[in-house]
Length: 548
Image 1 (cartoon, rainbow, N blue to C red):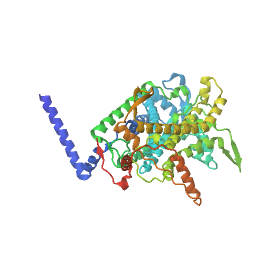
Image 2: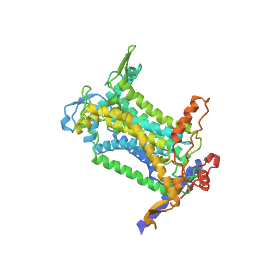
Image 3: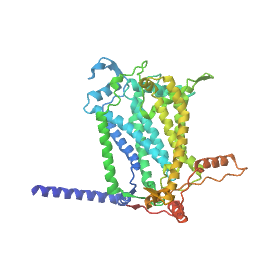
Image 4: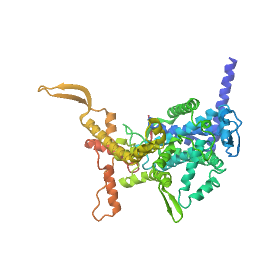
């Protein structure tokens, strides 16, 4: 009885203290108004919207484990004989960076777990951002008014690649040193300014003594600061602009339907965060990654066999291996096309396309409407084909980056594999685009048939003359709604003969994008309802958010 009274008094004091703190804060800031709006925010209940949260929680794991690692890592390239616990390397001349990474792995309690969790979290972080961007691309969630958030997402992806490369290079082992040597060659391939850039970054000729220290500062200070700032802006924009949502009964282009933030979304998100933490901890405990003691310390005149970078920069390795050895010497300047094109021009074009695509598609369609309903990929066959073609292109480069490993494993010719990947580099994306577009149109035809005839019941009847037929039942309301409520722009009108080339090009691209289509067989009343559900919220009036 006495313990219960003490517990009750302690709980009462805690509630009173929390209430007083809330009152103090509310008198000085709009806490009640902001909290009320945030807690009433509706979140869509679909698994595809969790991809961004996986990236967020893996970044939290990166920050926590990285903070632990910074307490023990020494980014110095000063060399001394190794005297640590790993017997095979004792007496070998190693850098302080490599020695501290070994010390973390073998002598610090939990150090190896933290190292491996940090590495796995980095891979999951980049992968989650990439898949999240694919979801946004295929569903058209980058369109107005979310173009700025798309640009922020592309920048986050680019910074995550830089952050991963910097962290991957810090241990100064033979594998990471090979990657730094490749980076040095890439910078040197830039005409005119390349040698100046390499001297500035490495503070002298390669390998120098300053690169690890500089990468360490970039890895733990500059890039994380930018990532945290951009993630905060990205989340603010998501809250301000609201989520997109899939077309379902009750969901239109003028409202937001979903579960409230508290307690539904908070409970699910907390469970997801604990799952991400648990999975990364399990992977760090049982799945070995980056065993630097097997690679040995970096020696400039040596290279390890089967040297493969992390997957997110593997496409650069593949592009370098596929490019023929072409160099020009012009006015005393060497143009290393075999490095410049695959490692500088190609990634620059990739990110330029990613940044520009929302504006390109808006220019092609002439679409200035706000969009809050997700597109189904099959309803946009050209966009979906372009996305699948890009994925195939990336996969070809990634496989080409391991052509030596593939050749050794399957006992085939490296030269034959290289030429195969060169052909696939050009033919693979084109074939993927054509097949994907045809599959999307076939799915649209199938759905048109479903709307017209209904769904098959599996029952077959024989009529009096002996013919066979099967019965159909009408689609349920929810499925019919999903198939009919979609917003597909019409191709632009063909301009007259005197129109400028820019207008003719735009009309041609518009016909290429939306000329081949399968219109749903909706009645006049259904067409009016579809128009009402997909109308521009600015022109048609902004609806209020609703919750399930």
